[in-house]
Every structure is written in C-alpha cells, then in structure tokens.
Image (cartoon, rainbow, N blue to C red; front, top):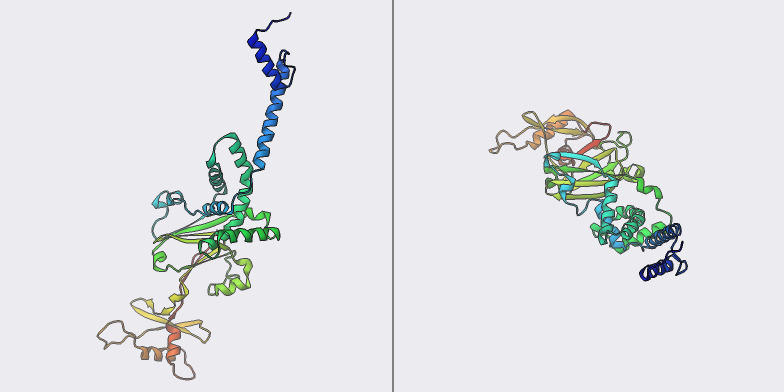
Length: 340
C-alpha cells in the first residue's frame, strides 16, 4: 500500500533525508533514522571532546591565583573557623587540607565563564592539568607574596624545572597540613619563627639544636613551609608541604636578653659551664638597702656563682652575664612526645 504524502510532509521528508544523508524524496526509515541520529550524537561528542582537549593552558597569573586559593589565601575566615569556639583563646589547632574540597574550589573557578555542556566538558578535561600546575606553583606562592620574585619569574622557574625533569608526578600526593594559633604570642612576638621536622625523635632533633645547623646537616628532616601569616593580631596560620612529626614555635632571635627565672617567692639563675650548658641553679640575692625593691645585688650574685662553681679566678662581668642570658623560648609540638 502506497501512502500519498502531502506537500508539507514531502518537504519534511526532503529535509530529513538531507540531514540523514538519504535520498531526498525517500520516506525516512525509523531504524535508519535512529542509527543516523546516534552517529550524529557520537560525532558531536567527539567534536566537543576534541574542542575541550584543545583548550589552551591557563595564563601563569591564573595558575598562581589558583595556587594562592589552594593555600587558603583570600578565603573568608569563616570558611576556616565557622565558630569561634572551635579556636578558643590561647589554643592551637592542627589540620590537613581536604584535596577534594580544593579540587571543587578550582573547578568552580574554572566554570565561572559558563555552565553549558561544552564548558563543563572543558572544565573536566582541563582540571587535571590545572591541578598539576597548581601543585607545582605551591612552593613559590610565598616567594611571590614576599616580593622575592614575580609571577612570570616563578612560571619560568617551573618551566625550567619541568624540562630538567626535576618535578615528580608523585608530588601531587604530598598532603598540605598546617595549624591555626590563637594566642597573645602572635601579637607579642610578630617575628616568631616556625619550624617543622619529619621526625620527633630527640636523637634526630635534639631540643637545644640550632635549627639552621640541623637543616643544613639533615635536609631530609625539613618539612617545607608554604605559608606563615598573621590573619589578625592574635591569629596565626601556617601551612606545610607534608605531614610533620614535630613543629617548633620559637621566639625571634632578637629576643635574647638578660633575665631571671622565678623560684617560689624569689628568683634564680642557671650555673653554666664554658660551653653554655646548665649545670645547676643558684638563688639571686637582692639589695636590701635599695629604696626600689627587686634590684639585683650583682656583686653578691657573682660571689654566689663563685661558691657554687669556682673558677680559676673571680668571676667578671662576662661570666655573670653568661648566667643571666635568656635564650629565646621554644615550644615543641610532637606527634608522639608530649610538649615540652
């Protein structure tokens, strides 16, 4: 049985035939039409994927900006601490950054230009490349922030390191950890130094060791500092490349001064040998006839030190000063040892 088509139906059949590649006057076969539409969908998907794959790399300043965000720069503080009770006064909180959250942050930034299927496909294709570039940029964000180099210089350094094979594909698996400190120490010592080590064993990291000497002799123990910044007069944030086993908070070197140590209702100072090691303690005498209370009897202190640890000759000012010297305080936070 032959079905006569109206003029409108014939026009529609001609257009469908032209689109599907069949004879312009032939009645469209439903199965052939479905096959043709499936082929067209496959071709469109391949074209979209090829277009997304051909997306050019991001400019260096965009990669740097994404790296800044990955180190929590420019993020509202309420995203870090949504409730003040999570970070009470005189407290420290250690944490590890969620890589999934950071990946969504970068994906959202890349998708700002549009929310169509082509843009989403391009974002999914570009995201691994961007994540790798951001990971490579992380160690240089602090250098750029401290104006030690510019963003183009940082990009050139990364390109050179990539060409030299100095960047490992496994670096992306290195976690970023850190801490938030809320304390009067932050405002009292704005130059406070932060050090992180891969071991908390006293054999590897002695309590009184010079950190610069240790870092020079044992670079394998150093956990790189990615960010150290005061978010407010009393809040400090620090981020590390890796998970340290030991973190130091140390007063700045310029805080070396003379002082006494409290001992009940009185005061005392350490007795030190020629190498500066503490070998005992001695009570500090005060001037009884002084109109101002709390004045040290320096001559009496020298005699007390001579009695406790005699020297070949009477102590002079330098030997007394050695006992009065107060080195910068250092607070240790270890993974397996109690804080000292």
